[in-house]
Image 1 (cartoon, helix red, strand yellow):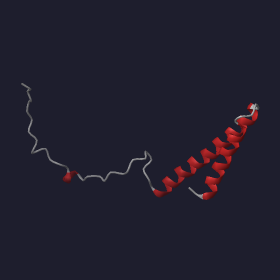
Image 2 (cartoon, one colour; image 1 turned 180 degrees about the vertical axis):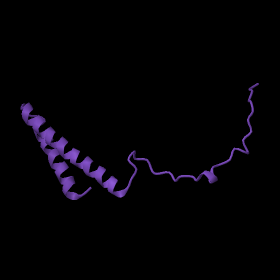
Image 3 (tube, helix red, strand yellow; image 1 turned 135 degrees about the horizontal axis):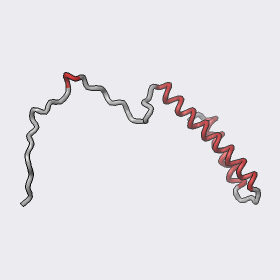
Image 4 (tube, one colour; image 1 turned 90 degrees about the vertical axis):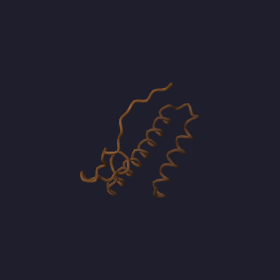
Length: 85
């Protein structure tokens, strides 16, 4: 995370901490909303960086596709029943 973004998050979090003990709900809500907006920008920025890097959208690493000719065969599979005695 870039230093300027980290500083913005830390500043917004510090403001929330500074007003949380006050009796002014409007000030608390205002600072919480400001923190949420900063965090939304961080999430959006991270999402854009992933898209630019070509990362999969679901967050899972890409699995190499197996060509049809290289598919594992079932020739060695033996079906049977198992009984416990």
